[in-house]
Image 1: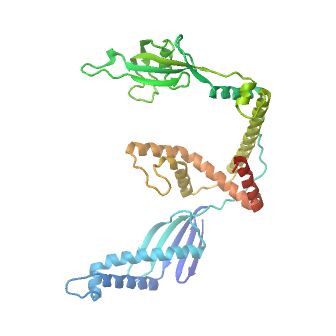
Image 2: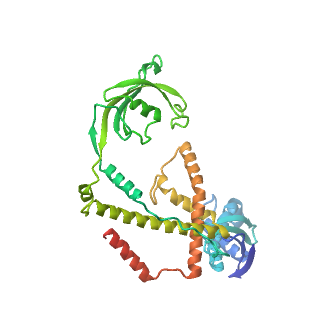
Image 3: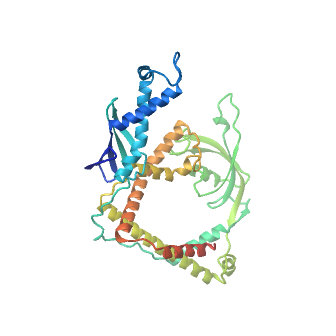
Length: 400
């Protein structure tokens, strides 16, 4: 912890440095300046208030102090802090990154005003070690099997749905089903619930396994009753871990028919004459992506080792601001807009989500601070010509 004291224009400021990003300013305003501001506040009060038996602006000082003394003192302190805090920051060349917190205000009539302000600044990162690291570059190998996987996904994207009525559903089929609790599940005196219809693709996890198994035993137009066991981790707490008897019917079954992987399929995807050309393009794209991922993985691993090898402190205000940025889409309001109200339960879940993201936010900010420090230390700044060239490249890729 280091501290320094300076005095300028009568304002005495002591700066303590508890950490790389924290500063505590102890500010003393001399009594002469305090008294000038207090007289100004008192005069303004005298001009604006009325008391029975006295003309406006002619209230005796002793009565003014008795009636309005605490209010005058508070207004005096508030004005002095608003005036002198920015002066102290400028005097000490401190650039806060968040609103300062005023602490320990001390003032007695006729004396100096003293107060402390805790502020956070951009941390000064001292990188003691930036070399001697060993990092293995991730593989960027691409195989023909990877190309086959992409082509199969392209086929799936262009599959057509055809109605089928002569077989039971299978994984990959789209089904429309009707589900309702069996009659025995309806409590006495209550109306039977209406059937609900759902449409989904089997095998994609949109329904629990027991329901999918029941559906796969029925042909279109058939229905049956099944004892369905709901998993312990089912989303609906009332149904989780229970067994219910459900009536399930298959309303419609659609099977996906896939196009052949031939030259016509390649031509339908763009400027390709045959499958060989399509495979070549897919391979080239996959290799470019693999190289980019490997390079990014290499850089991330190296940067992670640098962060681990050095002391990097992140100001709490930076973490909170970054969390606000990360969760901005969940606040219910745009930039400058009002946040949508949340129920206590929603607020609790939102707080839990923010806390879950906190380690990620801290790690990201540490890396950003290290990169900024390295860039300044090694002179790694792009020239204007390099920026213009990069913008031109991006414009060309997007056709704009």
